[in-house]
Each structure stands twice: as structure tokens, then as C-alpha cells.
Length: 114
Length: 115
Image (tube, rainbow over all chains, first blue to last red; front, top):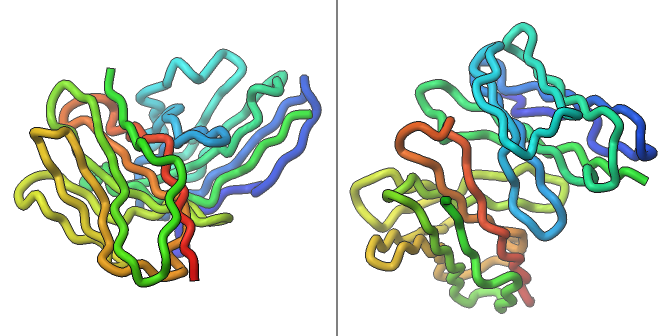
């Protein structure tokens, strides 16, 4: 069990550029969650998948954000036309169906938009 | 709407002293309750959870938490703090039914341990 991994760990980009983050969940976990954490705040839910199906999206997830989990394994989160307000830590978590609240978190991807 | 309040942004304790971190929640019904710890460069780690039953729950690393329904609180405690406990602590809630199993977090309490 290698845990949840995220790549990259840090990303600096210029405003208006597109960025994509990857999350690899624990291998047998079929639920995958994305959260965003800004400075001085707790994580905020963005979206979650059960296998390849995206079942819920937060209102925080504007049209510029898209998440996929094409084969029910890894997931990507893309932000188009980044804005300075997108600067945050993006956290991925995974869980089993039978233990949905035992969410295991990855180390996060810190995005800085200049 | 559900919310979680952690009234203490920063807490400093001496190593060996006892610790209590406060958490209050606002929810339509008693949610599931959690405490997570986040160390620099590390992911959030689940310390303990309350689903039902005994209102005093034991977690990892010597932590415990007590659920008090009348006060809508779920405070985290540790009898003797170690320097390695310095980290940020988050209280979280999750709905018992529906809600997509998403967690709602408080704003966190940064713990500093003085040697």
C-alpha cells in the first residue's frame, strides 16, 4: 500500500495558462475526492468519483475546472485560464465504498498563479 | 448549512502538558465527526472518528475526543503532548445520509509545542 500520490507537488504558472494535476488513489479504492485548501482555511470539497462516474460537483468548481477519472483508477483535475484566485493546495483523497468516510489523503499539489 | 467552528487558530503548549482543541459544529442532525492532522509536506491523516455509541473515542497517537450532543461539540484531547505533535489539526463532519460523503472541515488549529 503506497498511499495516495499526487503529481506534481508544486506548480507555478502564469495567469491565463492551463494546468493539469494527477492523482493516483490507493489501488483498491473506488471512490476518489478532490478538495481545495487555501491559506488559513480547511479543505473544501470540489468533486468526487465512484469508479469512473463523477457523482457530485461543488459550486466551487467553475466551468474552468474539469475532472476526469477515465478508467476508474487515476484522476486528473484541469484548470483552464488560471486566475490568481486559483492559487491553493489541491488535495486528493480516496476511500472504499464500504468505508466512505475513511478517506486517505495525498500530499497535495500546491498551485501558485502569478 | 452545515459548518464547523474551531475557535482557536493557534495554540501553544509545553511538551508534557495536556492539550484540548475545541470543535463545534452546526448541522441538521448529528453528523459523523472526525479529527485530522496535517504536518508540513504531509497529507491529512485521520486521527479518530465518531459514528455512534460510546461518546469518548480513542484514536491514534494517544489522542481521544469526546462527543457532546448537547453542546454540538467534539473536542480533541491528549494528556501529554510530545514535540512531534506540532502540526495543524482539523475537525470535520460528514452527513449520515446523502451529501455525497463529502467532508466539511473547520479552519484548523495550529499547534505549537514548546520544549
